[in-house]
Image (cartoon, rainbow, N blue to C red; front, top):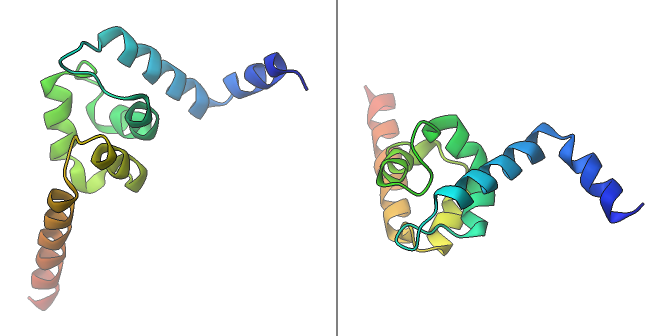
Length: 109
């Protein structure tokens, strides 16, 4: 199989097309001040489209939207955001602990 054949086959996958579209859109809207790395773009493309696609990529709005949906973000996306310094591991752990505390309180009632 040639590389071009592999690219053609991959492009037929809806997930791959969505990732390519996310990368293209993010590339168009990214500036020096709001640059998001390729790893974050790839890891968070599905989360972006699920929760925050009504905000321009790289904007303060999309960052706020992703934070407000933090408990719903995929583990892959959260790990990429931590690795990129967009959120701290401490913040992720704090939110998980708070959510677990709410779950325990709700089940005790």
